[in-house]
Picture 1 (cartoon, rainbow, N blue to C red):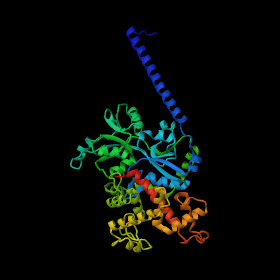
Picture 2 (cartoon, helix red, strand yellow):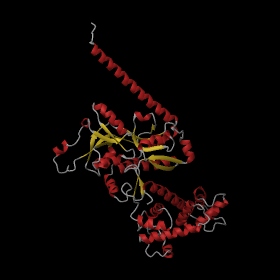
Picture 3 (cartoon, rainbow, N blue to C red):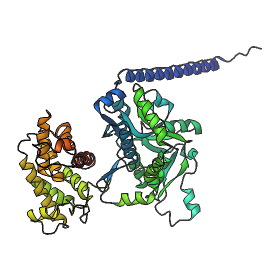
Picture 4 (cartoon, rainbow, N blue to C red):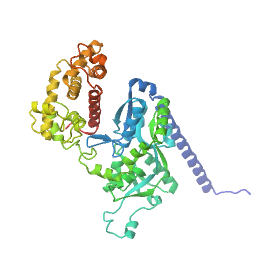
Length: 489
């Protein structure tokens, strides 16, 4: 039996068919555009792999400045990603260079153009992202949860009244607003969630420079209504902000990993092998628990004045360090890095050799510098910087100021005369006696061997060379961290 429709109905059906065809064509066009964009990104991606990285001797990692990933606390760089990266760099016998991400939306672009070798920022492995980058083995499992704020008077109202003011199921988000960064996996999840619950969730996109920690704080402060976060991040932040409710899951378990370029297969393979082995180590669990489960330490850090996410401070002695650094024309953050190296900002510190105070000045040296009380922070820093300045001025043969600083620091550690011996040894071995790295520092190490310190032109004999070499190296490594977090003024 053939059914005949009125002309009006036939027109409506035809329009519907045309509309459906048009939508399909638009979706195909978007897909084609997306694939073309990804293809262009990969074609322009730098082909820097493990061999080139090994040749340079540096592993460049992009990290996020946050309360769990990478931060400064009481003068010490810390963070889950930071500690793992140090272990990875040591495993690969590479120097670690950390670059802090200032735009979370452009991380893949920064990676693919070769500015960094690795994105060491926990990202959920998704199919959408696999076209652009290569995910490593997963570091841990988590799931995404809704972050919402309880009413300000939640402690005073009844349980029933409290429950009425909160969301208990993702379906209740229909026609409501959730705030997240656009190019985050949270954005992808909200799009999928809208489809799953058959209703529209309004997505408020936030500044790409905001970390997940900062966005969670915006919920706690009432600046935004809801956000999405990984459960482990949400839990540790909620331990400090009990006004947050974070127990509504919006996803299944997800694998969290780091990211490499697709055309860096050797680096990708070696990192995967390392992560698999690392997951079996007890140390890995200790590091994870330290940043994601130790609520007491998290609260202590958050409340501290010497936590870089709170203040532009390194220690309680910053004003003194700035005062005396200015007198010798040094960056105060470099001097702070040395003070930490000497005493970890403990004025009562005492070495096995008898050095005391913040700057670990020996009693005889303290007397010559006019230091009356070595344990007094002001006296110690004043005397220590006077001595540094004295050493710096003696190295008139070093034209480069940065090298001159390194020579001065090494002399502060092991003695001026030993460094002069190392310069003599450098000349004999055809090295540049005015350059520290890979030249005089190597000769300082060499002076721990009898065949070198017994040479007739070596005047001051044996020196435990690894100590001054590591001393200078660690001060400058810490200085680089301080520059990432702390402004000069």
